[in-house]
Amino acid sequence: MMSFIERDCPICEKPIESKKGIIPDINPDNILNNIDYYWRGFHKEKVFFNYSRCCCGILYCKKYFSNEQLSKLYSNMSDNVHSGDIETDLYTKDSYIKSILNNLKKEKPISVLELGSDNGSLLKKLQTKIPIKKIVAVEPNVKMHAKLEKIADNVYSDLSDVPELDKFDLIICIHVLDHIPDINKLINSLYLKLNNSGYLFGVVHDESSLLAKILGNRWPAYCLQHPQLFNERTIKKMFEKHNLTEIKTYKTINVFKFGYLLEQLLLAFFKIKINLPNLFNVHLKLGNIGFFFRK
Image 1 (cartoon, one colour):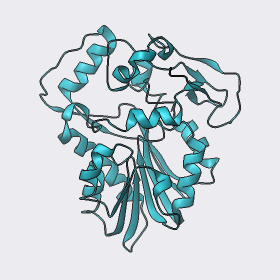
Image 2: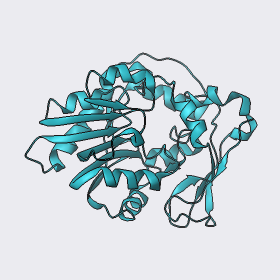
Image 3: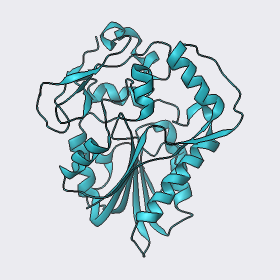
Image 4: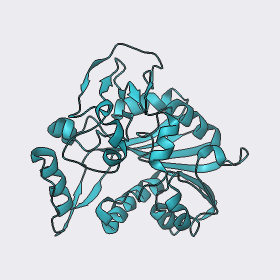
């Protein structure tokens, strides 16, 4: 029988009394035998752990999966490119690379680690833009390793597998911090993996975005895969706690096929799940935060 762990606030690290949060249609306690089904994608019913808002501002799940349960759930997923839409995924990653290039102050070839590399498309494109002496990819989904081995010098399933002495000038973690229950342990590990004056770039969902406010508990980022969600204020608090210096925090631009976007709105507002033709691309600041911090 699956059971869940109890968590303290990721920033305060105490069981602080929380303010009103976000409530799902169905609580995971009621679908224990069907977790895999709801884990894998969008459904008419919103299934996630209750989100509580701590007095520090962060939105997090007090109850969540154990690390062992998460390893099993993540180990056999398809890649994260929504609806097979590789084209718009690359457009979005182009904007991430542009941000990296605008803020990275390195003249010599750099060493890069990407945590949560997925299919490796960002690393593949990045190495055509700047001189890189070493690429390391960390991806828990073993299905992606064959693709990543064609791009990276080394591929690992977990950050703890990376040799202790390996240090990096740039660490990338796009839509990773939303997914990690023990986030303080992770950020501390990333800090230790950075060279002096090394950079940390990433993206997280913005729970204070206009889209999140409009959709309420139908917002796609409220899901089983996210034990916490940030806004600009709480992501800054998280990194300041670990002695990282802010370079830039900003709202990112995402590129979507119009059909895909309409599909998600119909699912969110009317619980209608259909496939629509993708007619054109839409560029929107739709609910993500990009961040650039330095050691």
